[in-house]
Amino acid sequence: MSGSPKLEDIYRAHHPWLSNWLQKRLGCHAQAADLAQDTFVKLITKPKKFPNLQEAKAFVTTIAKGLCIDHWRRKQIEQAWLENLKLAEEYRHIDEVAQRAIIDTLIILDEWLAKLPDDVTRAFIASQVQGFTYAEIADQLQLSERTIKRYIAQALVHCAQLIDD
Image 1 (cartoon, one colour):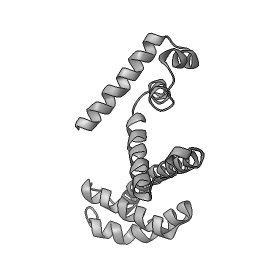
Image 2: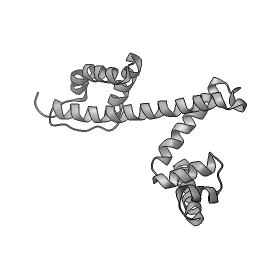
Image 3: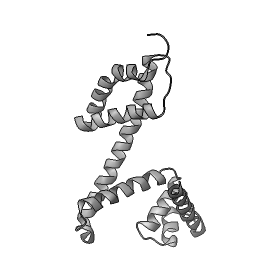
């Protein structure tokens, strides 16, 4: 093959390997198939030229690793929600469609908050989710109340900007 490999060559050369690789990591054939396809969809949406198939494989692997991390993170969020659902009597009546919407919202919020510094995220969650006062959060994080107010404002502005986008 001369020149850059085409997408179909990359797909043919690496899809079977990628599917097996993902299957070993995920333990689920269907999930592996979905993530393998998602990997190549990302490659289609952001085309890139590679000098050879080996370079393409390295890039495909990087994309797939990122998708695995996202998958596991979503699974952790979903599991945490379901565990909390068992403990919270007032939420037990929520139907599956509403639960899915809540989980999807939590996943999006997690992605947004992951872009903020850890202390800002902790302060925001403590305030908005756990209901702690600014003074309690300041005590927990060993920061001033003024800093906590600034952190909460920063997180709210960040989320508002992402909603606008």
